[in-house]
Every structure is written in C-alpha cells, then in structure tokens.
Amino acid sequence: MAKIIFRLRNVPDDEADEVRQLLEEHDIKVYETDAGNWGISLPAIWIENEQRFEEACALIAQYQSERSERVRAEHEALREQGQLPTLLDSFKMQPWQFVFYFALIGAVLYLSISSFFSF
Image 1: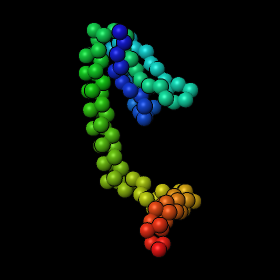
Image 2 (image 1 turned 120 degrees about the horizontal axis):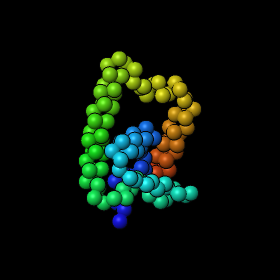
Image 3 (image 1 turned 45 degrees about the vertical axis):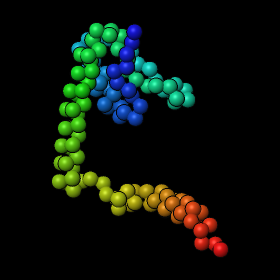
Image 4 (image 1 turned 135 degrees about the vertical axis):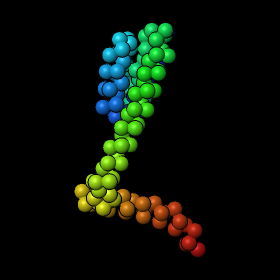
C-alpha cells in the first residue's frame, strides 16, 4: 500500500523539485497526486514500496534540515548586506495595494466598533 512521504501544499516549486530529484537519485519509486481541478485534493508525493519508506523519510528529513540552514544563511547574508525588502520598499512598489488594504482594515474596524458608540 502506498504511503505519503511529502505533502506538496504550500511548498515552493524549487523545494518540491529538489525533493523529486533527491528521491530519483536514490532510485526510490514514487508517484505524485495534485490538488485537482478545485484544489481540494491532497497534493503529495507517495512512495510505492513500503520497505523503503523509512529510508525516504530519513532522506527528506536530512534534506529539509540542510535546506533550512541554507535558507537561513542566505537570509542572514541579505540582511547583513541591507538587501532585504522593508515595509517601505513594499509600499514603494505597490502603493495602491497598501492604500486599499489600509482602507479595508479601517472599514472593518469601523463596522466592528461603531455599534458600541452609537447610543
């Protein structure tokens, strides 16, 4: 019986590709399911051979710890170089989106608390 070894929901494409490549390099036979037309199914990578389940899980765990360290190091390097995008940078790139969100937040707050102050 097949078992899930890696869920793909909210996983970046590069990470999913690296996991696929890792499993292929170790000759672990897998198949993949997608989220379906409506996005409600389970996108995942499944292992066909249950005897290699533990091996596959160990490989993925090792890969994820290495990826975590690598991504943290990249983030830290960008922070030290001052190249991380700030809130002001995001505002400069999409000012209308910020105005829209702040107006939406203001409207929700107004509707939420206006009934308490209208005697």
